[in-house]
Image (cartoon, helix red, strand yellow):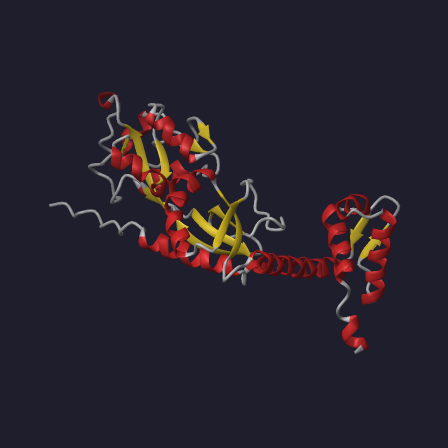
Length: 319
């Protein structure tokens, strides 16, 4: 029993250790834990005595993890996150329900996710969704966040990531001043103002390579925007051309608010291009068994599959 006891340190010692590591010192950790600095220091030293391994290297001006402390802190952080998730599910669950805290990029949330959420509510009325403010970084150490919809290539450290949509990118142009926007061939794009998104800096380069006009189009010219919704509005206002994930702009194309050019001599089947980037549903290992998250993940991926665009046919061979 003594050996088993030694392998399971008290939770308050693990919490003190993890908090000191997160805040980089005893002073800020004490504030976060609502304890005195001496109490936090005592708990950390007690944990080191408990495990029999030094976790910190101490000097007058700094407190740094030892290599063993770094390995242990990663494991402790995961255990605490999983425990918090299990406790949250227990507290909020009622007849198989629960609460799910998620974040989403604003444009994707407004244009793609929100219109589909009534279906999820009908299927799972016992699950409550809480939207957490989106931040431009991946941080699942925040206790109030269970999952997030992120834009990228699907690789985030320590995260499970499931592709949703977004790789099909459409080229959109203003519907007005048609005579001033001749777009019959890919090379015509070079004469127009190109709008760019800050998180996809190589979009126009990828597009020009796809349509065989690399070198004719300056991929770094034109105004930059930080949201696709703003770019769509800019195109509607006549500011220029933009490359936008089709899932975010199909409604505007269908309604005629923007137009999608049709090229006569492009090697690509459409005027857009296939990107390596897209929208992904992401969550940490510690949230894997959360019931509400599993239900939302299943519904989200099924919804994405059901609304995925049909594959584009290859370009017709010349007669």
